Structures are given as structure tokens and as C-alpha cells.
Length: 396
Ligand code: SAH
Image (cartoon, rainbow, N blue to C red; front, side):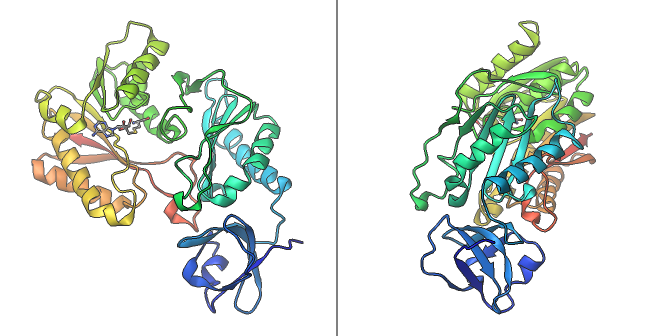
């Protein structure tokens, strides 16, 4: 039985927790034990003192991220059990742990009932990000549980939370290995190879969330002239080439990303691929490119809205970007367009793309509506976890 300090909610504020939403907002709190510090594990009770579960306390508008709706002890066994359940889903139903596929997301925060924690697996290395002080304090226990995870073959755990923890918490986390060290950094995705640079790359080093959408692209790429805009590690480019594209041009404003894309093309196809990577700003490239040249374009920009206040500008950005691509695409071409802004809804994104279509006067049909893959599950009680949206459009 857990003996954690207590946070008591205001009357009626237990309702969202009883509906399994995993957050307690600060405005819902009536009182809390005065010894509670940021990152502590706390017990949450209703106004009448009924226990509602345990979670990590944090200063800010989301005050508690719930770990369990019963009064579990949050110890090694707890994390080991959650990790084992998450791994079983990936290995079993999702069949993501195969000889030709060893890159996948093992823990997707609330979607795996571990709010504040992200773990991506690349072969025998786990890259772990804490988004809450509670998970930061638990990092050693979690790292050991990852290595002990039966059948997962994890030998190295790299902790990468310098930019993900709340700045005000002054935790000063260092990006470093908790267990093991750097060695093989080639990951396999659907039989294709990728260098993953978790030390210097963005996020955990690779965007596993586009796996299924890249696989879909492979089916459409045959004989096409492909522009992969915002290419980063070249994920879409490699799939397009493996699907028989006539040529692929990869564009990113970061010279490092362009070099990584070139390296990944070489890793899979040697020097024989009809591919070119270009370091250039997206709007400049789209403005300068010839009319009617690319008949398959991928637009996968970084999140334009990092918070709610930025939504309006983000939507205008999506509209401008999509219009710039659409107006130059020949009849019969395909546009793969994405938004990874969590604050922008599926409907809002679609409206921005609709506005781009209307602005350019093209005939546009939606062929597919895309989202994040199943190793990024959305807890149905926490719809905020759905962040990636995409459309495949047929442009005439
Ligand atoms: N499509 C990639 C992920 C894209 S991440 C994948 O499948 O892995 C977003 C990328 O956009 C980053 O690599 C970043 O360097 C690049 N970027 C950001 N702003 C840009 C701009 N204005 N023009 C071109 N690239 C940009």
C-alpha cells in the first residue's frame, strides 16, 4: 500500500480522472501536503477523501500526470510491468520486432500509460526522453528495466532530455548514456537501413512515426519524379527510391540533414541511385523550381504550432506551403502533405489544405487520410495524444 503525500481535489474535480483522463490541472487542486516537491510521486484523492490513484507532481498547469488509477507502488516492478506490456504489443500484435525491422517506439507517453516518457528503440539501443521531472528522477530505474526487458535485446540506454524537461524545473539534465555506450547506429525499417544519430540528431534521432506513411509512398513512387521537402534523414527518399522512382530530390534547410540523407541513400543503394540532396529553404526552393516538373511531392515540415497561441499563424503557413507546391504540380500528380503540430486538429489542417487548393484553383481529391502508426497509440481517454495528420492528394 503506497504511502505517498496527498493532493486533494476540489469538489467534482475527480470526474475527469474517473473517466481515465491522465492529467490533473492545477485549478482542480484544493489542497496538498506541504512537503510535496516537484517530481514527487503523489496520491490523488477526491474532495471526500476517496483515492483516485497515483501520479507525478509537477509545477505548471498540468499538475499531476497519473501513472495508475489504483494505489500502486511506483517502483522497479511497476515500470518493468508497464514496459513489458508495451513491448508485448510491439512484438506481438504490431509485429514490429523483426529481423528486417528493429526501429520502433516502445513508449509513447500517455498512449502507453506512462505520461512524460518517450522511448524509441534502434536495434540494441533505447533512446529515452523525459518530459516531466517525475520521469527524470525515475530515469535510472527505467533504464535498468529496459535492459532487463525479456526478449527486447536492449544493451544501451541513451538519455536525451536536455530540451524536453521544463526549463523552470532547473534539473540541468545531461544528454548521456545511462547504460552502455555508442556502437552500432544503423537501424532497420521495413528492410531499409538508416543511420540514426541520437547524439546530434533531432528528437531521438529519427522519425519512426512516418514508417507506415513511407511504406505507402513506396507503393506510389514507381516511375515518378519525387520531391521530398523537409527530408531530414531522407526517410521518404529511401522508400521512394526502393519503390522505383525515376528520380528523387531531397531538400532540407539543414546541411547536416542533407549530408545524412546522402549517407542513407548510399547505405541502401551505393552510388547508383538517381538522387540529389539540396540544402535550401523550402519556400525558396518551391518558388524557384520549374513548373510541372515533380509529379510526387512530400511536404513534412516541422511543427508550425508549438502551442495553442500559434495556431492561426501555423494554419496560414500550411496554406502557403501547400499552395506553393500545388500550383506547380502537373496534372495527375500526388501530394503527400503532413502536419505534426499537436495543437492543430485534423479538421483545421484539412481546412488549411482546402484553402490552398481553392487558392490555386486546382481539382484536388483526397486519396488517403493518414495518421501516426500504432506504436504511437492514442489513449482514447486522452485524445491530445493524436498529433500526426496527413493527406495524400490527387492533383489535376
Ligand atoms: N520528413 C522527415 C522529418 C522532417 S523533420 C522524416 O520522415 O524523417 C523537419 C525537417 O524540416 C528538419 O530536418 C528541419 O531541418 C527542416 N526544416 C525546418 N525548416 C525548414 C525550412 N524553412 N526549409 C527547409 N527545411 C526546413
